[in-house]
Image (cartoon, rainbow, N blue to C red; front, side, top):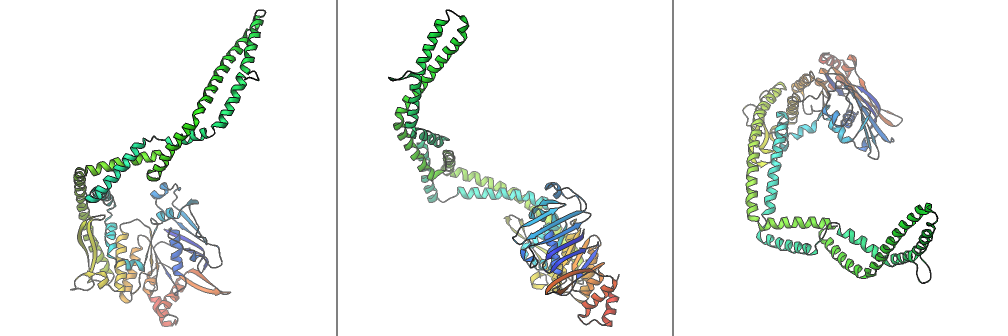
Length: 549
């Protein structure tokens, strides 16, 4: 249940704290006083889109927070890692640059995560909801919501996805003969070109690395020659290997006099062997570089081929080999198309049969729910001063599709003896508002949402019908919290808590404030709703008589 709403710098509201109670709460006020701003602020807390135009002129950001109590332990908390508490604090800051900062119990969340939570806390119903009843595309979704058939819908959706995949596969295989011939010829050419290239995974990177090495072969060869000369000498100098051999010879002679020199002698001998091996390895490496020009030509030609193929088939040898595998598969599909088409048709038939069984089961659930929906809506409408109404859920069988085999539209007859017709052809504005209220009341019994908001859903309703709508709203509020924005005194009089939205001007700026009314304040506000600006003793007396609390 929503207990406290705090608003800063939203439109004409500079700052406001609004307390809400259990049961039936109404908000009234002059047109333009800011009632819709309160609804906009609540919508922002629920994660709905908040336009920067909401921010009060002259300020950099708007802020809204709300406190809820008695919140159930929803799966949302575990999903998004937010600690659960029965008292819930939601905060949202909206900046001029479009940035939003949202927090739930102090933990940062995204707007989409906040919206997922908001759907479980409050439902808001406005005049546009009534207009949605004219859109027959929404009717099946409303019935499914009433039927609570989400699990069956999920099972069917998976079956329909298999049907769709089988249809796509059959369409892919069933190209016309001329297109098939063109595609086969193209694939055969591409496969032959790639096979002839004999590509290896990673070959391009290895060749480029080798090319880079050989292109610096002259510098590398000079460095190796210098190293070999230092080891073995040349015509003008003696190398370290020769000097090391002389040292070994001298130590070998000294060993005759002192065996303690055996250790240094042996280590120098090992070093001499290692130096000779390293020198020979360097000589061989230098000599192989002599063929670098021919190898460079070969590498360049190979890389030219690979780069030309890359422009057609992929950015690397690995990608081109993947393309080759896919091309071989597609060519097989074309060559053996008749057999594959037969198999695809068989798979499609099996998928459609399985989906059709589930669609019929889903239809049976919907038909049963439709009968109950008709009964409940008619009962609700009778209580809303529409006793002669007939409300019908009319099914039309459709080809197998994403929604099953059901088309659905709501039909109505507002008067006894009249044939049922589409809502858009028979429902007046006031009747449509009552139908929507009846639908929402019936739907409310299917969910556990604690707070419902009705934003001027009483449009076009007056007289006895208005009294019936008021009684219905109060009835809905018995098991939950209801907030209702209204202009009708009949509805305001039946509320348990009354909030007045008013505006004033100070220093050229407009300010909105929200006040909880006591009994005297409620009588004055009801008198205004009854008689307008001219409040008389008669209207005050009528207001007092209407007030049941």
